[in-house]
Each structure stands twice: as structure tokens, then as C-alpha cells.
Image (tube, rainbow over all chains, first blue to last red; front, side):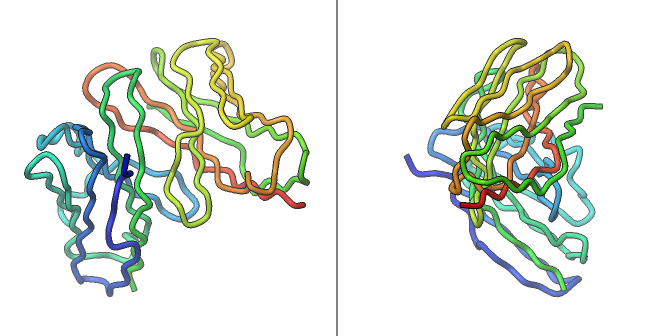
Length: 115
Length: 114
């Protein structure tokens, strides 16, 4: 089966500009996650969707970050306006099952550089 | 809160050497534990997992045992290959409820020399 798709793979913007990332999860996966991975650190959750509803967005900087999953499939993550500290790899992951049976499958990520 | 601590890298080994990457965790209850691997230029891939105490996860020659008494999940491989060069992440998931986010350690970079 096809894996999690993300685009673009790389993006360079200047601070205060806006940027959007796209994720297409594995077919049939109801749960979708966005993680932020800063260089030298492990990924940290930004937001979790179950179908098109938000389960957890407690760590999403809502003054500048937004995300949606309107039809319960694809998702977009937006940053507006971007700050230098937003430079990171943004990872999308999806899963089909819940609880202890869950396995999250990750996409290749979008590497963002804010100048 | 929940957290994962893994040994600092980078780790450099010769081919066929024995590998151990230490991982300890702090969590309430009984989390599930994972090792993910990130090869250069690629996304995270699940390497192995364990969902309860004394479970052993294994894959591609790698093993890790869920030790609740020491809150550890150390990754081991008896004979590493050059192709094992990657960054390895230990992670936990606090099961129960609808939230499923993984909590990751900082990662350990492994370089295997021929």
C-alpha cells in the first residue's frame, strides 16, 4: 500500500511570510497527526485528528499555526506569520487502529527553513 | 509528565560490533514503548514495539525488552552492518483515552564503519 505522502519536501521562506504543508495519509487511516521535529530533537506533537475532528491540539501555537482536515482524508498545516524558531521538519503520521494495537506510519516530512 | 531519555550520540561502531542504545522512560501506568529509525533523507520507520512488561520486540536483528522494574527499553543488536547507520528514536505512548501522541527521546545517531 502507498505510504503517507507529504509536500513540499523542502521550503525556504522569510520570517513573517506564510507557508502551508499538505499531507495525504494512508488510505483508510482515520487518525492523522502532525509533529514538529527541530534539529537535534525528537518529534513533538502539534495536533491529532480523528477523521475530521480535532482530538488534541494542546501543543499547537494557535496564534500562528492552524490545521484542518475537512473531509477526513487530506490535511493541511499552515503557519502565518512564520518565525525563525519555526525552522524544523514537519512530519505527518497516520494510523488505522486505536489503543495498544495502534502503529503510526510517518511520511518523509517537509523541511522548513525560515530566514 | 511523561518523558523519554536516551543515550547521547553519536555512536560510532565497526561493522559486526555489538550495539546497545539505552532508553529509559517516565510515565504513569503502562505505556506502550517503541523504537523508530530514521535513515538519511527518509521519514521515521517503526523498528519494533512492546506493549506490556517483559514483552520483547524484535525486527531485522534488533531487540528490545520492556523492563517495568527499571523503566527501560534498551535497543540491542548483536552484529551491526553499515546499512544500520541511521538515527534511532525511543518513544512511548500513554494508552487509554483517545489521545495517541508519541513522546520521543532526542534520538541517537549511529554510524557504522566498514
